[in-house]
Length: 324
Image (cartoon, rainbow, N blue to C red):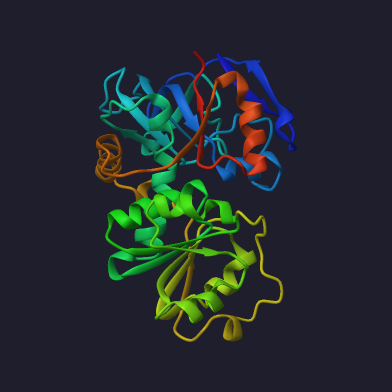
C-alpha cells in the first residue's frame, strides 16, 4: 500500500510517500480502507518534534473514515462505513495517512450516512474534541452562556455550532476584523476582537461575565480568559493554537479569580458515545447542524495540506481524500 511516512521531525517536506506492507488483520483490531481523513493540530505537534513520546519513523493521522475490510472479531460486516478516532492512532501505532489502517476496536464507530467521504471526514475528531470539551470539561448543560477563545479555528467553529444547537448564548473571539462577519453568519451572538484583554471589553460592554470559556488559544490568553467568567464559572483549556504550552511565573492564588474553576480537556474517543456521534452526523446531513469545513486535498497533495495548516489559513477543517 501507499503511505506517507515521516522519518525525522521538521516541516511538511519531511513526509515521504512510500510503499509499505499492508497491516495484517488480527483479533481485537479492525482493518479499515481509508477513504478520507482530517488533519489535526496534534499531528502538527508530532511532525515538528514537540511530542516526545512519539517515535519515528511513523505514519501519522489520528482519525479517518472508511470501510471495514476485516473486523478482527468486531460485530461489523466488511464494507461497513466507520469512523476511527484516536486511541493511539498515529502515535503509539501507525495511523491514517495510508491506504489502510489497523486500529483497536475501541477506536471504531460505525456510522450510517450518505455524506461524501470528504464531508464525513471533517467531522469525527472535531466532534469528539468539541463534545468532550463542552460536556465533560465545561458542563454546559448547567450553563447559559459560552465564550469561545479562538473562534475561527475548526474546533471553534464546531463548538459554536454545537453550543447554539444546545441553546446557549455564544460569544466568540478573533484577531482578524475581516472574520467578524463570518462568525456572526455562523451563529455567534457577539464577536470580540481579541486584543488579549477581552475581559476588559466584556466588563465595559456586557451586562455580566460569561458562564463558561472554551480556551483554544492556550496559555497565551488563559489568564485573560479566567477573568471573562463570573464566580462559579468554568474555563476549559483544550487548544494551544498560540503555540505556548506553559505559563511562566504562574501564581494560582492571584491569577485564578475567586471561585472560578480551571480545567483542561484532552480526552479520548470514549467521551463521545457512538449514538451521539451518529446523531451529530445525521444532524449535519439534514442541515439541522451546520459545521464549517475547510479545503480538501488529494492524497498525493498531503504536503501541501500540511503547509496550509502551518500557515493557519485554512478557515476550517482540512481534509485529505484517501488514495484512489
